[in-house]
Length: 286
Image 1 (tube, rainbow, N blue to C red):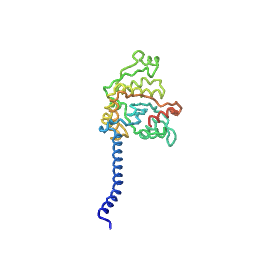
Image 2: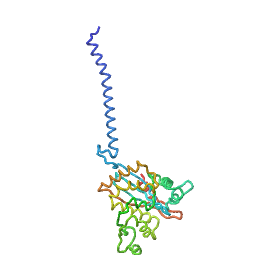
Image 3: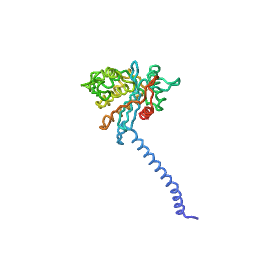
Image 4: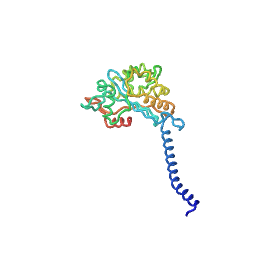
């Protein structure tokens, strides 16, 4: 007969044989869970306890529509990781693929609104904007700020003879306010083709934000105040994220505001994007 001491040690050994691996497994899973939580916290912008600024990891891709008799369009990419804001001119006559055949972006907008225009542009270039935002020139002026000013160098978009003909030969960098921008654009567009005209608007909007970086932090709140005068698919959460992103970028000395235009050529049917234009669209929407 075994002694009681022997039975005790044997029972203890068997118990440890079960508990030790079990305890090790629990500790391992607990460590994995903690590590995952730390990763999620680090990826969540705005949680200061892990040193990541709100908006620092966000990227936004928007189709902006300017509501006029002949609608105009811009692609806007707000890229916090790259510290870059890009305005890209998209001619209203850009040809997009529709179920019944090709149509122009402006005709699609006039017939079915910004949501349909955004969808057909996505079908054409293969990538969709995150959201659309449509407003009149007056409303966009309110977003930029009625007291905001910027100097625009007309020499960047036209030659000397063109500037002289329009009265900008000597004073080639007039000071603009949002209220006079539409009239200014109309004047400069005389004789421009669709690509040049789309590029001009992108350039002017770029200048306003490049010369007034503090305005970035006010754009979203202004959009909320003008919500009754806009059409957008942006949700309240989208606006909050955009606000965080713009606040982050406004604090970055290396942040840049730039402009471009979708490359293409004029055809009897409209403005046909070429391979370079499609690639640029894919870069901005990717």
